[in-house]
Length: 406
Image (cartoon, rainbow, N blue to C red):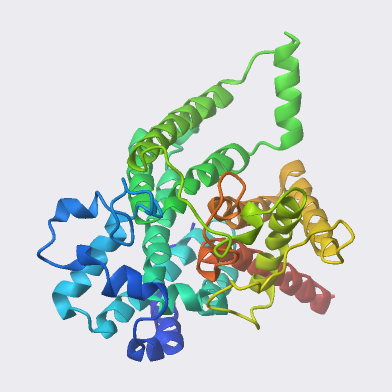
């Protein structure tokens, strides 16, 4: 992995500043009002321990009306802004812009793991300027995404250093990874999904396994015709340690919300309270909707409520074709990335993981969320999209260069 240089950092920071400098003159809008203006946890008179007892909006976690969004470290940065400028919005927006620049620079370092130098810069610049980030960067509450992403990427980079000489285990990076995952989760809940990305990286990138090879090895072991390779045992140990730590974080998180899920209304998420098959068809359709926003962010919206996306109530709805096409395309990329062991398939696999895994908490798959579509939750998934685009550009430019030489 090549190191990033000062010229690249300056370029990325300059591009971020050029895109978002006008946000410094914005005020507080929409959710900023509840999270900043009406949140007593920002005031110096409020004890610091209260930040760890209340949700993101300043409501006690024990109350039923709480949204159960436990992000004390993000609220702590709001409190720092309040100490510096009270409720003057410029410092809040400035810190958001700085955090976005930091994420973009760290993302460049991550890209160097899977792309060449030029393609890595392209991916990082695309991430820095992608319009889908407008809500996350210019909206003060989007800081949860920005701050969590810093520790999310740092945790992943730390884990990539856990493989020592002769495939030995280096425990210090693993311990640091667990710590950074915990910090990322205290900034926003999706931070914990980096553990899944680390697991995929360990099995398919660091160890170089493919799905057919794993199936063959497991089949031979179950039939008693072979033993598990020592390298695979080491991989299992690392994954078990990582998953156990993650499980512990999940248990603590469940205790914090007192085993209660937040209560949302039909206005917040109409599909969540709709009958079968409307609920399933609509939730599945929202996946290609989000993917289309990454591919063509020409129609962005700050508030996807009030029937912005009508429910899909029938199998005959034409929008189901979009859902079908999306899953076919995703499945094709998944099969390619898991079946083959080349560098291209590894890059595609990690890009897909970055797109899919961090989006799971917002997908309504395990629990309902309080929105239909929220562009800010695409902040981390857009990293995978940017890697895919840069990888495609790398393949096309390489092919064109070869043809020119001929």
